[in-house]
Image (cartoon, rainbow, N blue to C red):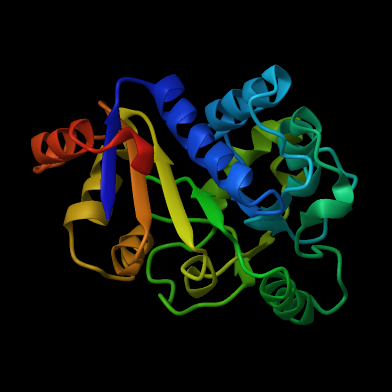
Length: 261
């Protein structure tokens, strides 16, 4: 696992966006796995800037969704499909027919989960999966004690998560779905490159547990230690609990530029 410590969120976004750009220049129809939330926004903004300047053309890339609410129509403004259309596809100039996501409105949700895993495999797998991390170490909606071999499946949201997400639903928790479809940890680990981005002091404990702690289901993100190409990009605040921070800074500072992350 490579750990890259950056000064701030904007610098982290630039590094990850450049990794995506390099990938797409090499493989124009690459599958980019994306996440929702505020943490990855600097990545999407930096990549969109590169697209507008002509530094990279991502119009042939495919975009794969990490998770989705169950029961929200696809065109609901707060469905993750709609959010990603606004924040990723439209700014990058990627057509919706190049979008891969689970069907959160399916009558048979389990079949929809299995179909999404099959669709990712049929697409050749995810080339680069961008991840955030929760304060408890969760990735996607894989909460602590999720199986490290889990596949895409339905999960029940905690009451706190529904309270937190109510701000996107006019402050009304009753509008927040109780369930989501999420890629499982086993599904996530099949991506060829995993990039976890974390910013802020509130993520410091989770980052330290994921990078320097044992591999354990109580900290789902620790599963990245099992991956052959996992990169953790953190700002100084999120890196503040890392015992090996100086080592990580030294190794990245002396890495050849051509190698990327």
